Every structure is written in structure tokens, then in C-alpha cells.
Image (cartoon, rainbow, N blue to C red; front, side):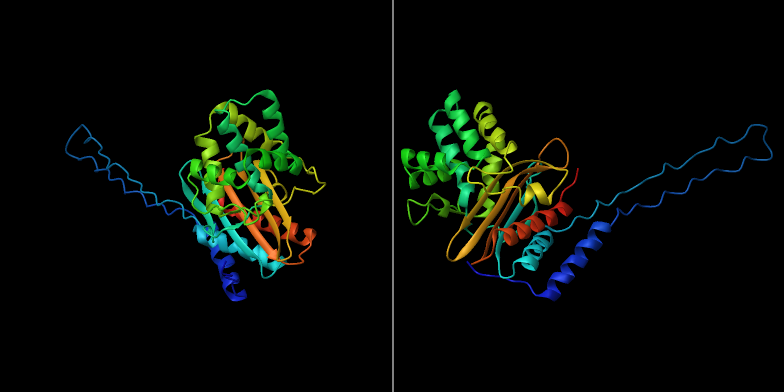
Amino acid sequence: MKRLPATLALLSATVAVGVVLLASTPVTATLAAEREPIPSATTSSPTPTTTTPSTTTTTPTPTVPPEEIGQLVLKAVDSIAPGSEVGVLAVDTQTGQPVASYNADDPMYTASVVKLLIAIDLLHSQNWTPDAATSAELERMISYSDDNIANSLWVKDGGNSIVSRAASLIGLTGTQPPDDPSQWGETTMSAQDVVTTYQYIQDDVPAQAQDVLLTGMSDAASTAADGFQQYFGIPDGLPGTSWAIKQGWMLLRSTTVLNTTGMVGLGPTMPYAVAIMTELPAGTSWTTGSKAVTAAAAALKAAFTA
């Protein structure tokens, strides 16, 4: 994966552009003048008044280009953990348009985000009608990011073939199983594929199975099954929003992986599918990494509308 660190000058300019654009207001055309003929002095009845209809044209409110929001996200991460690799995509699922993008097609380690694919594969194998025990197991795996459940399902359902089946089912093009079949967290996905997975859950998964996935994500616990504090990124960086999330974290010799992904909204609905994938320099502490990803999520808020 090619590193594309931005210079300080470019990042400062980016922030300035973002501020200017966010402060812009629509341009409103001036109203056409109304003309009233003066009544004639030689007649007892006033001449009827005629009015030229007024016309108003409105220029759409300017929005910050997705690439510029993506650069703001990169700057937020790099200011805390310099040298990080970042993949970002946020899409308004109501319009299908991206609102933030940076290296969205680059494959990144998933860590526990791959648990979504494990769950989708199992639900599909049961014709989207899971029994109560399966529903409870999957909800816990997602909300508590329970590795023991993931390990069991990974072995039972075919390991790497889970990723291949789910990628084919959803239509993912930037997703690969791990090189070491025993390490499901080393599956790679692009930010684009993570967002596509959320769109698939929203649009194509039948209601009973969809409820299992969304319940698990909406009820994400602040403390995961392994004791990790998983309220970084979206939960802490976007206070006041509604969300349904799947987080990921993993420590490798080459990198510290921290991912925050999910559905987000400023109101009761959650129209934005979001993926912030990061591979931080080796040795980056969890505290520093969590702060960096939380700052990245905060930078996304400029792209959201109520």
C-alpha cells in the first residue's frame, strides 16, 4: 500500500478551504421590479394595476468536496500518529453519493470488522431466518466483539471460504481472506467494501436477519469481551449522533490497526455509511491510536447534514 502523507502546507490549505466552503451560503437572485401604471387623470376609473410576477432563482448550497473532507480526516490522524496509512469513505445512502473519501479502494487489515462477514455468511446459510440461539450468538459477537465466538464460527464454517463466499454474495471487489487461514483478523477490505457491506445490510438483507446485525451494532458495548475500550472513533468523535457500529483493533509487529465503521446519523435515522480504516506505525499505543481515530471521526462531521 502506497503511503501518501500530505505536507503541512497542503493540510493547512485544506482546512482553510473546508472552512470557507462550509461558511458559504446560497446565492439568491434579486426580485424583478414591480411596475404600477399611474391612473389617468382624464378618467373617473383608475386604470387596473398590473404586476409583473416576481421570479427567484436559487443556487444550490455549496458542499465541501468529498476529497477535501478525506484530507481533513487524514490530517486529524497524522497530527496525532504521523506516518499512518488511512482509508476513508462515507456515503449518503439516500443519494448514493460519497461525502468523504480518501484512499477508499486501498485494502486494509479489518481486525474485528470481518465479524460482519462471518455473521452475514452464517445468516445467509440459514436462509436469513436464524433461530433464537444463533441470533443471540451473533448479536453478542458483534456488540461485544467476542473473539471466542468468532473463532468457533471461523473454524466451523470454513475459515477463508467464509470471506470468499461473503465477498461474492455482497459483490465486494477489494476484499481478500488472510494469508494465514488461522488469523481471521488479517482479512483485508477496502473502505469502499466496508461501506458496500453496510449498504447491503441496509438494502438487501431480509428484516429478521437485518435486525440481528443492527441490534448487535446499535448495542455495541463500551467495553469489549477482551476488555478493550471500543468507544473510540465514531462513538467518541461524533457525540450527539445516532450510530450502529462495528469496531476493529489488532496489534501486529508491523502496525497497530484501529478501525471505526458503521451507520451514522445526526437524527434518529442513520443515513451515512462510514468506514475509517487505519494502520498506524508499529509501536503506536492504544491510547494514541484511539485518540487519532477519534479525531478522524470528528473531522467527518463537517460532511453530515441533518
